[in-house]
Length: 395
Image (cartoon, rainbow, N blue to C red):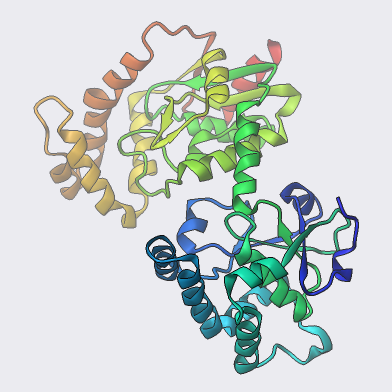
């Protein structure tokens, strides 16, 4: 690979480096993809400065598929020229960059002229002229810009902002696709841990509360799959939360596993293979299946309290809860009117009915035949967490 400093490259050559090297150097990552692409998944900590919004991206893609790359390029050229001032300003803000000389950015008209001049000879010539040069000698405080595959989108924006003075700007080899190519093999080859312990128990026993107390007492010892998924792993599990995509879940999981666990011992809450709509990868699922199981239990009054706090503490989540309760009722004996109970404020009776007639039978079926190494009472989550850690330390 070239060791040419990024700042010494000509305007027709733009520097690219691996995402691992850039993140290790503390680079600010700027994702040029559309908001929908970014929402689906992105490099952790990245800023989204979209070259095209979702509608513009759809139009460019349609022209590419139904007409030609040249037609798509012409549309993209017009879109970017029309909003380049805002684009560069947002990149400057995300990069913490003030243009050289302290004179500020060029005017909108000047920036538009630059874009049109760069692109006037069409996609073929621009693609030929903008050469991606791999570098290993990163600038100080690098700014990493990327699109989906490290192609013409990111090379064009790199050339523009570097010409304007942002010489610490570096492209990401492979773009977002390169990031995914890093995540998936990492999950597929995760070596596991020396020991794993799974906290299991009926709904409302406070497994998540105990797990998070364990993490507070011993940072770096737990894997919180529900937090990564934005879901409590049940038909009501998304209420009051923001479930994530499969790709975002895998990114978060990859990042967590890469940090390792205290003494190579992992403590995790028991889940099904699916946490909401996301699927636990095979290597992690295998670790859960081969782990030591601990049974967490609490009186039903305490379990009711836990679920009320989980699902009813946020008034803005109640409309979604009501809709989900209508779906749950269809799976229960005699199809009780759970939504009406919610409307009447019969919250404790509602939650107890859910536990006894829906959640407990469901959980009992999923746990059939499983053995447990110890039982922990969870009315006091902090005390329960200490008991869990004492048990783990004795093994």
